[in-house]
Length: 177
Length: 195
Image 1 (cartoon, each protein chain N blue to C red):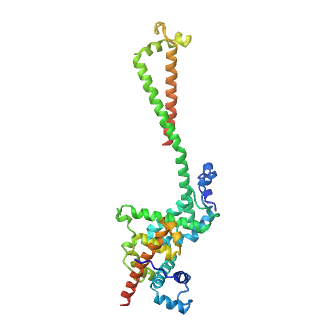
Image 2 (image 1 turned 180 degrees about the vertical axis):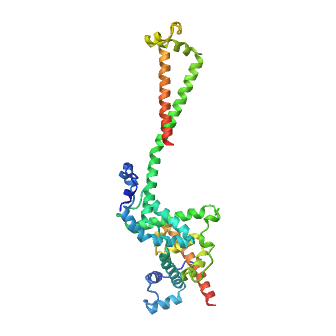
Image 3 (image 1 turned 60 degrees about the vertical axis):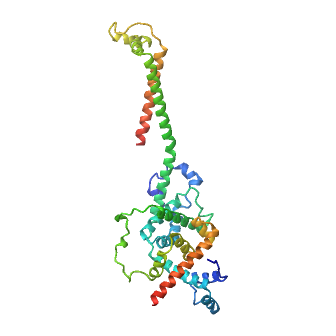
């Protein structure tokens, strides 16, 4: 298809768009449009589209701009909240992973030591110098064998940390829901 | 009326969002209402005539305005002017309409527009619909968009290229072909009506 455009197309198009065709144009231009295929098509198509546009403008179904503004604000807010909560979710996943690793490590450590912690638990009142507690329990309930003070303390701290972090994770998870 | 005040704390908690120039809306609510008043009719006309579905046009028009207000880097109403905002809006609507056409069709009976089942009333149908409607229906969706933007909205080739995302050089050829085709269809229609 040959792409041939008439140099007078712009002039004709402007007249049609302004609604001045054919009344307000020179006779010479009208004669040109009658003889020029490109301009004839332009007039036909532009007039049809302008007519359709004018009709459609009157038939437009419009909503409330306030409602659209409100929807946009809400969407922007949701997007911001989502952007902010993304790092929190990552932190929660990280905390959960750390918890699992610590729990697994403690489990392995305890498995290697058998049930030695039970012995330590029996000695706990003596080790922590809680003499008053020993007075509360019957004599002979706890063995007074020697035990390491360091490993039980580590276990206490590990358990406390586990409980604390677990609580924080549970809190964040419930808050998100 | 400020719409933010009608929704408590919608924006109050978003101090960082408001402070960020990238996330600021392109205009305030009053300017938006005025812009909407001036641009919505022509946007609806464009969407309704190129899609052939007034209900779809309404949905896409609303979504276009919401997306326009949520843009990360919107054209500034004050700096770029209303023409640039309007062009950007047409661009969003064009993309949404294209996405709609690309989506696989699985229309249920609930999704059908009501007027599809209404009897065709020749009196109610406007002259413009009778003249342009059948011819437009035979055109490809992209050609319908190009023709409407060029001949109904009066956009230049450069502006149409910005709106549609096509290369500016190819707009001229595509429009030329589309115009020739629709002119042929309109002439045939006229001849048929006269006969």
